[in-house]
Image 1 (cartoon, rainbow, N blue to C red):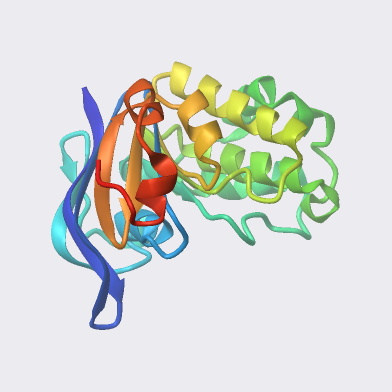
Image 2: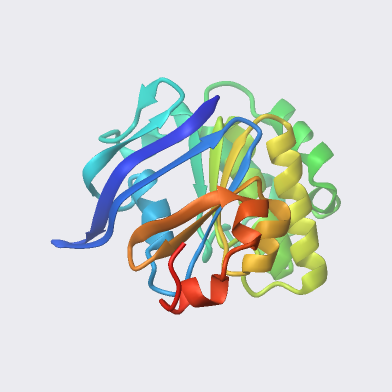
Length: 236
């Protein structure tokens, strides 16, 4: 069942559209990844879905709820969270305090949810009293993801969660992404590494020049001339 549904999204900065008429849907328990050359509109699309950028055309739904014109601070309460690539933790706060901030979007005591998060993110549990600024880059990315999960979302968007990480920690992050999907959450990932995307995803979308050039299962996408598509020499 589709949980996150974006239809015919057009958005950009000012009056100039960066993405045009893009449609993507993600099912519950599915990992769907967006890849493409630099400037293709991958991060622009992610920001548009969560209200960081204004959508000039199209609609976004989370389950049965239309969030297209919803205020940004209300979107997490309606099931969609977003983890940006940069500056995604509160460096001067501890790991636990960062998670408590994530819990502010929902009512009630957040301590139970924090325990659940620590049971999933073992590295964070060990460092729970350490300030986030002293964590490694990979641990900070995991903390940003964990904080977003505090609201127990239906769908999560991750903008290049492995950028700049070592291969070993890249594996750690992707393993956590799989655990999140296995728990029933719809996961949409913006990723630069095409090989990783194909390996770890159920569905892959290739963005080129502001459009969703081709979509398919990881097996289908792996058979295409990806270099040619990225460089504009081949058509899907």
